[in-house]
Image (cartoon, rainbow, N blue to C red; front, side, top):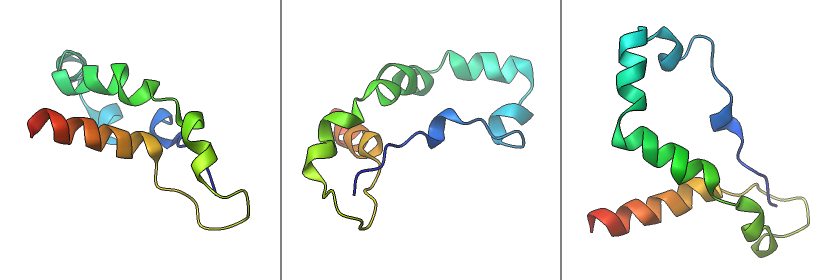
Length: 78
């Protein structure tokens, strides 16, 4: 059963990002990893992959954007 992954868009009020000082948040937002997250991870169209999952009630899928991101990083770092 296909289920879209939107958990990463929700900011946890007590999460790590919200507890960082502003200077560290700015440094984080300049990092390569944050850029990768914004440009790649957040823009993967999960709906394209929905057809490979059953329409019946069953186990939910692993997050497509996480799996595709893993494959990109695996290829990048060999």
